[in-house]
Image (cartoon, rainbow, N blue to C red; front, side):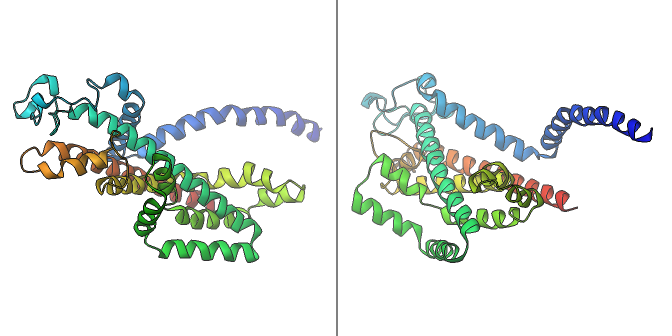
Amino acid sequence: MSDVSVKAALPPARLSVNAALPSQRVSSNVQWWREADVSVKLSMFWIMGCVIVAIVAQQIAPYDPAAIDLNARLQPPILLGGAWTHALGTDDLGRDVLSRLLYSVQITVAVAVAGTIISTSLGTLLGFLAAELGSAVDECITAFVDMQAAMPFMIVALLLIAVFGNSILLFVFVLGLYGWERHARVVRGAALTTRNHLYVIAARTYNASRIRIYRKHVLPSCLPTIVAGMTIGLTQIVLLEGTLSFLGLGIQPPMSSLGNMVGFGRGYLMTAWWIAVLPGLVIAATALALMLLSDFLRDRNWSANDRIKQ
């Protein structure tokens, strides 16, 4: 009789657990927002704003960013007594700074996101291969990672651009080669730890394929670490794009990016500082927002791992 009562009690218990899952997810999301500092929340709003601007830049830009008007050259922003027709002033060729800034955010975000995706994908794949195959493959990948980490990347980027020429596709590829060794090292360590978990061992016991194990178990477990690494990599690629474009080795005219806007305006810092300072402030604010967000994700990931261990 007791067995029957226990069996009868099982379905309601199972239903109660499943019914509690959505509320647990909602409370987890609310807790995630409450744990975030004011600076982190402002950083998320800034990043979302940059993404929205990158999507709708053509619709909200008041002028063609390449339109030249020599009669309106070097007009100051509205705060310095300029006209509302050019709220952020004009550059040395009479081009509207606001329009060029909006298009530059679009180009910089697109190039940085593409380079980050390439870098993260390459590092994640090599990290998984090193963790799964081990032995000679692991030693070769680790040696390659150490060699890449020891090599000054700026020299590699200058060499590739000098040999193969400058194009947007090559520039994105060069940015994609930056930081992949960091992703590979972190993902390898996380995959080696995840492979020893009981659910992965159980999946191997039931003869699950390697691809299925990594797709269903290892990758979801490593995903928070990968996302935190992506935010750090995105910050560094934004700064790298700005550096190379400032030196004239990145985005080339008639396209405009934040880096080459700073490069073109550096000769007018004493007379028309807004040409270089405004895009420079956008670069600094974006890098700071990404760093604050990456620190928050990293700390939250560590606290989650500590709760799992307990």
